[in-house]
Amino acid sequence: MNPQAKLIFALSLTLGTTLTISSNHWIMAWTGLEFNTLAILQLISKSHHPRAIEVATKYFLVQAAASALVLFSSMTNAWHTGQWDITQLSHPTSCLILTVALAMKLGLVPFHFWFPEVLQGSSLIVGLLLSTLMKFPPITLLYLTSPSLKPSILMTMAILSAALGGWMGLNQTQTRKILAFSSISHLGWMAIIIAYSPKLALLNFYLYTLMTAAVFLSLNSIKALKLSTLMTTWTKTPSLNAILLLTLLSLAGLPPLTGFLPKWLIIQELTKQEVALAATIIALLSLLGLFFYLRLAYCATITLPPHTTNHMKQWYNNKPTNTMVAVLTTMSLMLLPISPIILAVV
Image 1 (cartoon, rainbow, N blue to C red):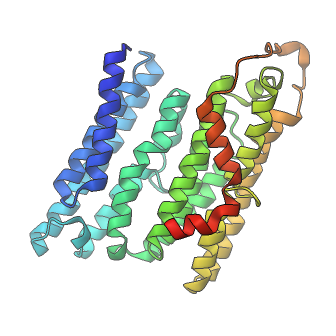
Image 2 (tube, one colour; image 1 turned 135 degrees about the horizontal axis):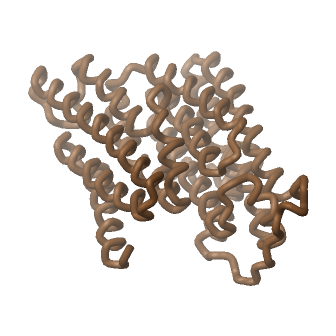
Image 3 (tube, helix red, strand yellow; image 1 turned 60 degrees about the vertical axis):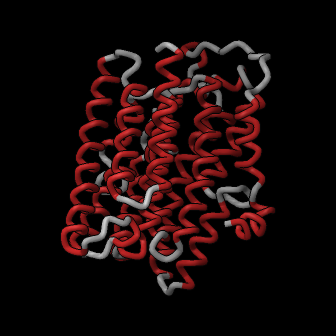
């Protein structure tokens, strides 16, 4: 793909995201979502491989259905109340349809089926965009409409997402699929708290984006798409592998790393809102995610391949680590001590 085309698609992604997060009118928000979908489709299918074309088709069908539901929800609300403002969503049917539409856009259970397949058929950089930037506009719409949505539906989807994201990630051997199920599990944490504390859900999304970007860029640096490849990369970049271990543990939410902060605050808020049972369930379900993060970390740093004759050792790479990876991994590990400042800003 030539640089001019890449620039156009990058600008379209930026424009679509900015349009959706800054709009008050449903039609403008919908237009931004369409800009995003059309731009990312070109990046998914740029390799001209049959798998990439199949994945782009799946992504297009799901996103088109979700966009149609967003439009239908807003039109139903406008028909009954005369309001096109995003924050004035009040009709019960519209609220239900919008919840389904945003769950499809984000990949929440039971509308998660497309996300692992699409991530597996994309490159690591496109996978990073799908896991972070493409989820920002739907999360913003969820943030703006959260007072109107039913907490019981969001809580059910959240607990199912945390359970299925952890459970399905256990037996995966492809790093992109593991990160896809990790994303579904993290979305569960955002969905469970957004009705009670929308700002906390956004903070969780920002920190998730930070840690996921660090993991994706680290894996892209060492070109690890499978666990078996990850086992041999310690000879290539030992320092990056050691940092990857800590970043994965941060993504799992272990203290004293950054990933512990949102989980701690969400459990605290849920307990204050007298839904301690839901807090207990989602905290226990996060142990499933911890298992496959530990498995990734174990493969990356602690093991040798079981049959060393079948695995070619990689040459030591003397190039300096990418500055972006260094900054993101540092922030993924060390933000917990300054949590009072973060909470004051948010």
